[in-house]
Image (cartoon, rainbow, N blue to C red; front, top):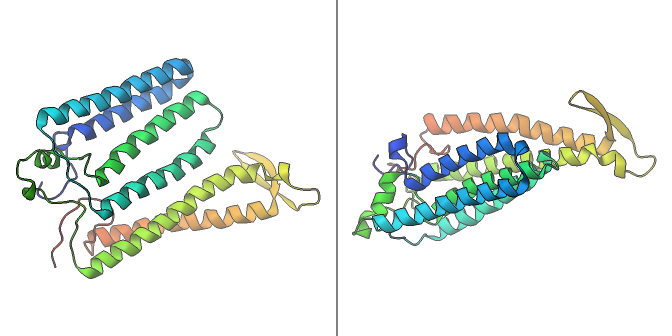
Length: 256
Protein backbone atom coordinates (compact mmCIF):
# COMPACT_ATOMS: atom_id res chain seq x y z
CA UNK A 1 0.00 0.00 0.00
CA UNK A 2 2.99 2.30 0.27
CA UNK A 3 2.20 5.66 1.85
CA UNK A 4 -1.48 5.37 0.92
CA UNK A 5 -3.43 5.01 4.18
CA UNK A 6 -6.77 4.32 2.49
CA UNK A 7 -7.69 0.60 2.58
CA UNK A 8 -8.55 -1.08 -0.69
CA UNK A 9 -10.20 -4.20 0.76
CA UNK A 10 -11.59 -5.59 4.02
CA UNK A 11 -8.26 -7.19 4.89
CA UNK A 12 -6.50 -3.83 4.44
CA UNK A 13 -8.76 -2.11 6.96
CA UNK A 14 -7.68 -1.43 10.51
CA UNK A 15 -9.50 -2.95 13.46
CA UNK A 16 -11.02 0.45 14.32
CA UNK A 17 -12.24 1.05 10.76
CA UNK A 18 -13.86 -2.38 10.62
CA UNK A 19 -15.53 -1.70 13.97
CA UNK A 20 -16.88 1.61 12.64
CA UNK A 21 -18.37 -0.09 9.56
CA UNK A 22 -19.91 -2.90 11.62
CA UNK A 23 -21.37 -0.34 14.02
CA UNK A 24 -22.78 1.55 11.06
CA UNK A 25 -24.43 -1.63 9.74
CA UNK A 26 -25.92 -2.22 13.20
CA UNK A 27 -27.23 1.33 13.27
CA UNK A 28 -28.84 0.82 9.86
CA UNK A 29 -30.65 -2.27 11.16
CA UNK A 30 -31.82 -0.35 14.23
CA UNK A 31 -32.86 2.53 11.98
CA UNK A 32 -35.26 0.18 10.21
CA UNK A 33 -36.44 -1.39 13.47
CA UNK A 34 -36.67 1.76 15.57
CA UNK A 35 -40.46 1.75 15.44
CA UNK A 36 -40.69 -1.68 17.05
CA UNK A 37 -38.47 -0.96 20.08
CA UNK A 38 -39.11 1.22 23.14
CA UNK A 39 -36.76 4.16 23.57
CA UNK A 40 -35.04 2.71 26.66
CA UNK A 41 -34.31 -0.57 24.88
CA UNK A 42 -32.98 1.31 21.86
CA UNK A 43 -30.66 3.46 23.96
CA UNK A 44 -29.45 0.38 25.85
CA UNK A 45 -28.63 -1.51 22.65
CA UNK A 46 -26.83 1.48 21.13
CA UNK A 47 -24.85 2.06 24.33
CA UNK A 48 -23.78 -1.59 24.57
CA UNK A 49 -22.66 -1.55 20.92
CA UNK A 50 -20.68 1.68 21.38
CA UNK A 51 -19.05 0.58 24.67
CA UNK A 52 -18.24 -2.81 23.15
CA UNK A 53 -16.53 -1.23 20.14
CA UNK A 54 -14.49 1.15 22.34
CA UNK A 55 -13.46 -1.67 24.71
CA UNK A 56 -12.43 -3.91 21.79
CA UNK A 57 -10.36 -1.07 20.31
CA UNK A 58 -8.54 -0.49 23.61
CA UNK A 59 -7.86 -4.23 23.94
CA UNK A 60 -6.50 -4.41 20.39
CA UNK A 61 -4.16 -1.46 21.00
CA UNK A 62 -2.74 -2.95 24.19
CA UNK A 63 -2.29 -6.32 22.53
CA UNK A 64 -0.47 -4.83 19.54
CA UNK A 65 1.71 -2.40 21.54
CA UNK A 66 0.26 0.67 19.85
CA UNK A 67 2.05 3.99 20.41
CA UNK A 68 0.48 7.39 19.90
CA UNK A 69 2.33 10.02 17.89
CA UNK A 70 1.49 13.61 18.66
CA UNK A 71 -0.30 15.40 15.82
CA UNK A 72 0.89 18.63 14.29
CA UNK A 73 -1.10 21.87 14.20
CA UNK A 74 -2.82 20.86 10.97
CA UNK A 75 -4.10 17.72 12.65
CA UNK A 76 -5.51 19.66 15.60
CA UNK A 77 -7.25 22.10 13.25
CA UNK A 78 -8.64 19.16 11.28
CA UNK A 79 -10.00 17.61 14.48
CA UNK A 80 -11.77 20.82 15.51
CA UNK A 81 -13.00 21.42 11.97
CA UNK A 82 -14.46 17.91 11.66
CA UNK A 83 -16.48 18.31 14.86
CA UNK A 84 -17.64 21.80 13.82
CA UNK A 85 -18.87 20.61 10.42
CA UNK A 86 -20.54 17.50 11.80
CA UNK A 87 -22.24 19.60 14.50
CA UNK A 88 -23.74 21.74 11.74
CA UNK A 89 -24.80 18.65 9.80
CA UNK A 90 -26.31 17.03 12.89
CA UNK A 91 -28.24 20.19 13.82
CA UNK A 92 -29.69 20.56 10.32
CA UNK A 93 -30.47 16.87 9.81
CA UNK A 94 -32.24 16.60 13.18
CA UNK A 95 -34.64 19.31 12.00
CA UNK A 96 -35.55 17.10 9.04
CA UNK A 97 -35.98 13.90 11.07
CA UNK A 98 -39.01 15.29 12.89
CA UNK A 99 -40.29 14.52 16.39
CA UNK A 100 -39.68 10.75 16.37
CA UNK A 101 -37.38 10.30 19.40
CA UNK A 102 -36.38 6.74 18.48
CA UNK A 103 -35.33 7.82 15.01
CA UNK A 104 -33.45 10.81 16.42
CA UNK A 105 -31.40 8.77 18.86
CA UNK A 106 -30.31 6.22 16.23
CA UNK A 107 -29.46 9.05 13.84
CA UNK A 108 -27.36 10.82 16.48
CA UNK A 109 -25.44 7.65 17.32
CA UNK A 110 -24.79 7.05 13.61
CA UNK A 111 -23.42 10.56 13.07
CA UNK A 112 -21.27 10.34 16.20
CA UNK A 113 -19.85 7.01 15.01
CA UNK A 114 -18.42 8.57 11.86
CA UNK A 115 -17.44 11.81 13.57
CA UNK A 116 -15.40 10.15 16.32
CA UNK A 117 -13.46 7.94 13.88
CA UNK A 118 -12.70 10.57 11.26
CA UNK A 119 -11.93 13.34 13.75
CA UNK A 120 -9.53 11.13 15.71
CA UNK A 121 -7.69 10.36 12.47
CA UNK A 122 -6.47 13.96 12.59
CA UNK A 123 -5.00 13.33 16.06
CA UNK A 124 -3.21 10.14 14.90
CA UNK A 125 -5.40 8.21 17.33
CA UNK A 126 -7.43 6.19 14.82
CA UNK A 127 -6.09 4.65 11.61
CA UNK A 128 -8.19 3.47 8.71
CA UNK A 129 -5.65 0.99 7.32
CA UNK A 130 -4.08 -2.01 9.03
CA UNK A 131 -0.66 -1.14 7.57
CA UNK A 132 -0.77 2.32 9.09
CA UNK A 133 -1.78 0.90 12.46
CA UNK A 134 1.10 -1.60 12.27
CA UNK A 135 3.55 1.25 11.67
CA UNK A 136 2.26 2.97 14.79
CA UNK A 137 3.10 -0.20 16.69
CA UNK A 138 6.65 -0.37 15.29
CA UNK A 139 9.57 0.16 17.66
CA UNK A 140 11.28 2.72 15.44
CA UNK A 141 9.00 5.76 15.37
CA UNK A 142 11.22 7.43 12.77
CA UNK A 143 9.99 4.86 10.24
CA UNK A 144 6.45 6.20 10.53
CA UNK A 145 5.61 9.05 8.12
CA UNK A 146 3.16 11.61 9.42
CA UNK A 147 0.12 11.49 7.11
CA UNK A 148 -0.67 15.08 8.06
CA UNK A 149 2.54 16.21 6.38
CA UNK A 150 1.61 16.06 2.70
CA UNK A 151 4.26 17.47 0.39
CA UNK A 152 3.81 18.39 -3.25
CA UNK A 153 4.19 21.17 -5.80
CA UNK A 154 3.03 24.58 -4.65
CA UNK A 155 0.45 24.92 -7.44
CA UNK A 156 -1.17 21.63 -6.42
CA UNK A 157 -1.41 22.73 -2.81
CA UNK A 158 -2.99 26.04 -3.89
CA UNK A 159 -5.55 24.22 -6.09
CA UNK A 160 -6.31 21.83 -3.22
CA UNK A 161 -6.85 24.73 -0.80
CA UNK A 162 -9.08 26.67 -3.23
CA UNK A 163 -11.11 23.57 -4.07
CA UNK A 164 -11.55 22.71 -0.38
CA UNK A 165 -12.76 26.26 0.34
CA UNK A 166 -15.26 26.22 -2.54
CA UNK A 167 -16.53 22.74 -1.67
CA UNK A 168 -16.97 23.68 1.99
CA UNK A 169 -18.78 26.89 1.01
CA UNK A 170 -21.26 25.06 -1.22
CA UNK A 171 -21.74 22.34 1.41
CA UNK A 172 -22.56 24.98 4.03
CA UNK A 173 -25.03 26.59 1.62
CA UNK A 174 -26.64 23.16 1.23
CA UNK A 175 -26.92 22.72 4.98
CA UNK A 176 -28.49 26.15 5.32
CA UNK A 177 -30.83 25.35 2.41
CA UNK A 178 -32.27 22.30 4.18
CA UNK A 179 -32.53 24.19 7.47
CA UNK A 180 -34.15 27.15 5.74
CA UNK A 181 -36.67 24.87 4.02
CA UNK A 182 -38.09 23.73 7.34
CA UNK A 183 -38.22 27.35 8.50
CA UNK A 184 -39.89 28.50 5.27
CA UNK A 185 -42.73 25.99 5.61
CA UNK A 186 -43.76 27.63 8.88
CA UNK A 187 -43.02 31.22 7.81
CA UNK A 188 -46.69 32.05 7.15
CA UNK A 189 -47.65 31.17 10.74
CA UNK A 190 -45.29 33.74 12.25
CA UNK A 191 -45.73 36.45 9.62
CA UNK A 192 -47.55 39.67 10.59
CA UNK A 193 -50.86 40.50 8.84
CA UNK A 194 -50.45 41.91 5.35
CA UNK A 195 -47.21 40.06 4.58
CA UNK A 196 -47.09 39.02 0.87
CA UNK A 197 -47.71 35.27 0.50
CA UNK A 198 -47.17 32.74 -2.24
CA UNK A 199 -47.70 29.00 -2.68
CA UNK A 200 -45.00 26.36 -2.27
CA UNK A 201 -45.67 22.73 -3.23
CA UNK A 202 -44.27 20.28 -0.68
CA UNK A 203 -44.80 16.57 -1.39
CA UNK A 204 -47.76 17.39 -3.61
CA UNK A 205 -49.37 19.69 -1.06
CA UNK A 206 -49.66 23.45 -1.67
CA UNK A 207 -48.54 25.45 1.38
CA UNK A 208 -48.68 29.20 1.88
CA UNK A 209 -45.28 30.74 2.63
CA UNK A 210 -44.00 34.30 2.67
CA UNK A 211 -42.66 35.70 -0.60
CA UNK A 212 -39.34 36.68 1.01
CA UNK A 213 -38.82 33.18 2.48
CA UNK A 214 -39.62 31.59 -0.89
CA UNK A 215 -37.19 33.93 -2.69
CA UNK A 216 -34.36 33.03 -0.29
CA UNK A 217 -35.23 29.33 -0.64
CA UNK A 218 -35.02 29.56 -4.45
CA UNK A 219 -31.64 31.32 -4.30
CA UNK A 220 -30.17 28.74 -1.93
CA UNK A 221 -31.63 25.93 -4.03
CA UNK A 222 -29.98 27.27 -7.20
CA UNK A 223 -26.57 27.70 -5.55
CA UNK A 224 -26.62 24.23 -3.97
CA UNK A 225 -28.16 22.09 -6.71
CA UNK A 226 -26.08 23.73 -9.46
CA UNK A 227 -22.96 24.32 -7.42
CA UNK A 228 -22.60 20.83 -5.91
CA UNK A 229 -22.60 18.86 -9.21
CA UNK A 230 -20.32 21.51 -10.69
CA UNK A 231 -17.78 21.38 -7.86
CA UNK A 232 -17.83 17.57 -7.92
CA UNK A 233 -17.15 17.66 -11.67
CA UNK A 234 -14.23 20.01 -11.08
CA UNK A 235 -13.03 17.63 -8.36
CA UNK A 236 -13.03 14.70 -10.78
CA UNK A 237 -11.02 16.78 -13.28
CA UNK A 238 -8.49 17.82 -10.63
CA UNK A 239 -8.22 14.29 -9.24
CA UNK A 240 -7.82 12.27 -12.45
CA UNK A 241 -6.47 14.79 -14.98
CA UNK A 242 -4.28 17.13 -12.97
CA UNK A 243 -3.52 14.48 -10.31
CA UNK A 244 -4.45 16.81 -7.42
CA UNK A 245 -5.79 14.66 -4.60
CA UNK A 246 -9.01 16.50 -3.71
CA UNK A 247 -11.44 13.58 -3.49
CA UNK A 248 -9.55 11.61 -0.84
CA UNK A 249 -8.64 8.61 -3.00
CA UNK A 250 -5.35 8.14 -1.22
CA UNK A 251 -3.11 10.48 0.67
CA UNK A 252 0.22 10.14 -1.00
CA UNK A 253 3.38 12.14 -1.28
CA UNK A 254 3.35 13.75 -4.66
CA UNK A 255 6.39 14.27 -6.75
CA UNK A 256 7.27 17.31 -8.80
